[in-house]
Structures are given as structure tokens and as C-alpha cells.
Length: 121
Image (cartoon, rainbow, N blue to C red):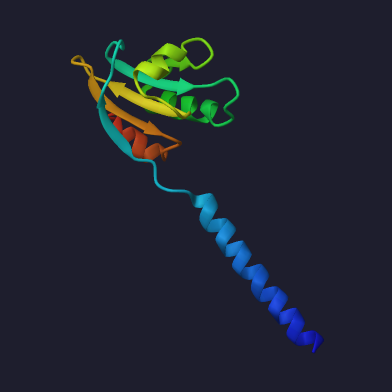
């Protein structure tokens, strides 16, 4: 009877581990097209000083397009820019064209996906 109980506990544990691993994978980060207000053409990282993942996204963007070629907009310094552009979560990456049209992606994309989005190699 103890062996049966042990097998049940191990089976439940295995299921819990599988569920946890699937949840940690998360959904793929996707781009969403929109028109931006008050932003010049370029690449932007929307961030918060309390966001642990924001530095990771900044590093990915710098690896993708080079250091100093994007602008980081901080929530605590410019909440009006977040509000006027419907940015409600961080980290977020946006690319804005000369007509104000562009895309935004919330989360951490893979480096390969980000390079493709930004027109890199």
C-alpha cells in the first residue's frame, strides 16, 4: 500500500512539474500595429524602474540595432506618453515610422525575432 501511495505522489508531482514548465514558457511575444502619438520615428523601449525584465529588453534592442540607437521611456518620468499611446504593460518595444504608424510588442521576444522585426540580419 505504501508503494501505491508513493506512485500516486510521484505522478502528481510529475504533472505539477509539467504544468509549471509550460507556464514558464509563456506565450510568444507578438507585434501589434498601431498609430503612435507624439513620438518621433525610431525604436523605443517602454520601461519602469521596478521592472526586472526591462533591462533584458534594453540589452536585446541594443544587440539588435546598436547602442544608443533607441530611446527608453520611463513610466515614472513620462506617464503621459504611456497613456497617450495605450502602453499599459512593460517591458514594451515599439517601432515608429515617419507617419506615426508602427508596432508595439509587450514582453521579451527572442533575439532572432526582434532582429527580424527591426530589419536586422
